[in-house]
Length: 622
Image (cartoon, rainbow, N blue to C red; front, side, top):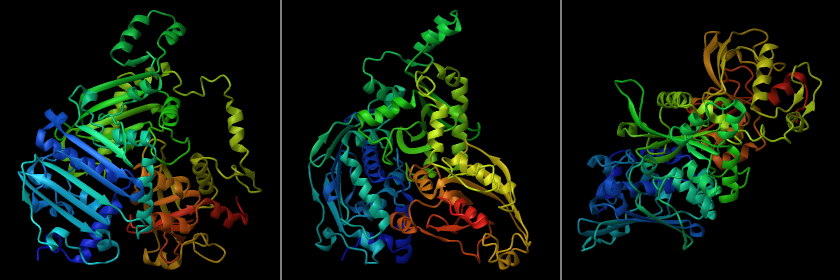
């Protein structure tokens, strides 16, 4: 009896197959990934059938039934041969790569990621005059319950394809369990379908995070495929093109005329007003938005350059917030999708939703940029949104864009953008009063520190408190090399510690290092360590979900508190275990907790400053 999926997967041990698939699923980080992967596959099928010059002949229809946790996507692309209908579910199997037609995806993980979370998945397709289908039930139980790999219904009933006069198309229908057995994935699925409650926000997400938001029109190229969206049988209008910052401001302020391209109308305005006094120049050059397109950009060395396109926009964060809240109906403090400033990555015209730099540093506010990398070889580093590219590439891209921001005059001219920092232009803004509001939440503790008012209000307070604890000899062995507010991670330190009365673990010094650890390391602990600073552990997860941090790259997390959530929360929502440090393995002085996570080979050491102060000063910090 035919069982093609089993035959293709069984070339590797079945336990290894389960482990590989589980690792693939856990590597996806965004609640939009299921939609992005399905749309990406349809976009590739259309590009293969019509090529990029005829994309408008392509059609994609996405239907979502949130209450049933069901998604269907239909495209009129190249179709799938009957023999390949099971193969597309095999991890690492990319038919597009084999045929050399991978416009967007490459690694062959997308349908594996989707299918092995489903209770039912059905793939129907017409290719080269043959119509066939494959239907699998409970593939998720193969990975998460240890069940045997199910046979497709069609193979079990010996059903084969039939001849047809239809033109090619593919429809994938996926239904997900009402309650997923893995708590982390259950939370992700809940949020995946919950975000469709807001049709306008979901439309904006598709246009900025998936192949629906093709970038070609931004750079003067052709139009995208036709796209239809239906949520709970209600049609939602979605323009099939990237949602630019200019497009957002035009929606928000439809009568506003002070939207300038940097080297076009604004350049002419600068020239025309150059002879005016400075104050009159400032008035004449005021604008709501500055943007600029770089159609051909080379990044890196001449031997192995990346070729890219770049769109940059500068508008006030206040206007982006108004767009989020007034037009998209998003809450001001929610953790869901929001339009945000930053440097975003696209791949061959397709937005990936990966933020390479949040541009939180004052030197680069308030800019938004999307870099569209055209080289197909970067697919080896990035599977169209599944993971981030290498830090080497990130640095190359970020440095190039930062140079353009300076050279093209964005840094120089941003002062003319109305409300670039709305607080400075607000006559009612009282900076001392605003800081006093933050101070009101602190308590003064009777401790011999320059910073006795706790808790810290922001991440900067955590950094200064940590530095003071080092300077006063309360935390031992760390020497600061660099602190940066611009790089991906906060600090680089040298850690150098030998066994002394002050560094050894004892009942009176629970922050110390066990003698056995020193013995195992020849009585000397020494290495450079990457330290990330946060107010609490939850902030790290928010950065990870937005692809701003990679927890596997951190050596130590320093935070004020691991809360406000308890350890059970992290286990239920992320599958991670937060626990007290293991004294027999901990090598870093001052560590109070550790986080055991599948995203690292070893537990992440955590220095909870609240716990450190409680231990050293015999005090309870709020």
